[in-house]
Length: 201
Image (cartoon, rainbow, N blue to C red; front, side, top):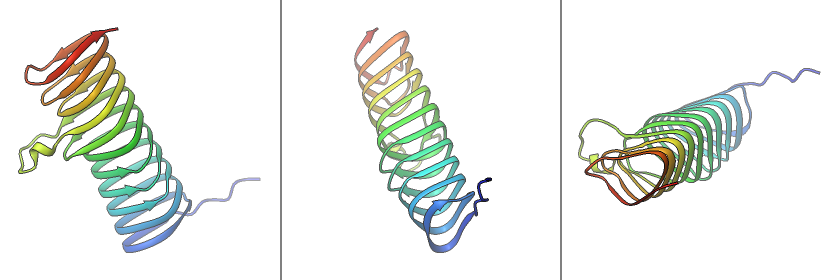
């Protein structure tokens, strides 16, 4: 038997809905979803709160999104602020904004520009590029990522505070403060950044 076609969920203005299996999820305005979401695409604009986890192919965040669980998707595009009270597993994480992941951020590729204060427990990915978002504002000094451990193949960091960075090729750019760097092939550091200890594996 064929699986029945899934309906889409759309919230606009101020609204609330239950979690479930949907084709597409679209939240604009102030929206709350009670429970886990499984869908193809999830578009969240404005202020969205998910009391559960999200499992999707694509997730697009514009504005402020809070996920009270885990996030698993193929592509995550961030243009704003996201907070995940659990793990984040993605193939591709790109965009500009501030991001908080209380547990592990695991990805194939990460290329983000930090626009506000960001915190992640651990990061693991093949390719990692963390940049400071360009442009000067009153809050420029808060454009920093705080993370315990970063592990990857090719790593480029700006404005990052980390305890340990491990990779094959590691480039520490501007505004970084790292306790330990372990690398296999390449290590470079910007003159203004701090690396307290480095070792070749």
